[in-house]
Amino acid sequence: MTRFVLPLLTLTLLGAAHAQTKELRLGVFPNVTHAAGLVAINKGLIQKELGGGVKLVVKEFANGSQVNEAYAAGAIDAAYVGPGPAMNAFMRGVPVQVYAGAANAGAVLVARKDSGVRNVKGLAGKKVAVPTRGSTQDISLRHLLHENGLKASDEGGNVTIVPIDPANMPAAFASKQVDAALVQEPWGAVMETQGAKLIANEKAIWNGGDYTTTVLTVNPKYAQQNPDAIKALLRGHLAAISYIQKSNAGAQKAIADQIYTFTGKRPNAAELFRALARTRVTWDINLKTLGEYAQLNKEAGFARDVPDLNKFVDLSLIKSLAK
Image (tube, rainbow, N blue to C red; front, side, top):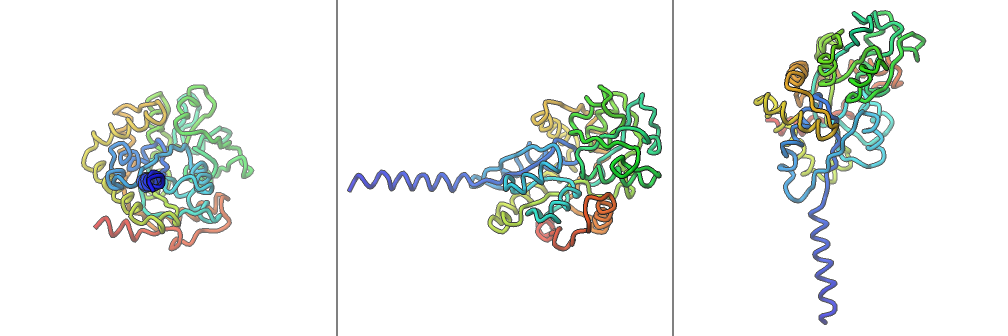
């Protein structure tokens, strides 16, 4: 009799341990446009909401292409990402859906001081960095170029678009690999500190600054199977947004600490203050401007059509929790 007790006890303990190691794998970038995620992670706000039964596993990404690959491979359950990559993944059948907004604006166009670029038209014949091909910034840049009578080289024009991870753009400027960059904060502010010239601020990029730069996405299958974990994620997201709005100094420290953890680079207080001033952290999404952005995405050639926003975006849960 006793020889069967130990295996049974062992199996029981293993089962209990497995139940306690359920995970929520969350992707995030080291950018101020992902401030809600960075603060939620650094301050433990999501893990607090998840409790002891679900472990938050944080995965750092540099761009939306990497996030899409991770979603397609089943390697993440949720992620902060730009609307451009998210909608392109959605239209390719990748399991991803928008559950909340995270930030509006927060991207700028800067140029090397010695590049000769003084305005958007001055980008003719120049090399311009964006985070990755098809990123929200890539799409915004192409729209800016078109508005100013220019085109990217892959569209038959003379502006060369160069994909570079945002955290590496300051070094690319220093080594003169590129002449300009359309990039998320704080990296625009960091390059300004190093002498770069601001060509277009967050309001001049598109629609007076009223455009979604970052959304919080979820794998719908994970959400269906783990509704409590997704509610916890969104509650942590809301708590982070509230914290940022109430404590600018505290948010700066949390963001700087988390960016340093990811990249080994720490933006200073002045850079973060400037970056946060150009970014509106919010859970809401203006669906009208998101629809217009989907048209820009199509115009840029990254999609043949626009997504059905009623299927791509579901704000019902975040709205109920935000009350």
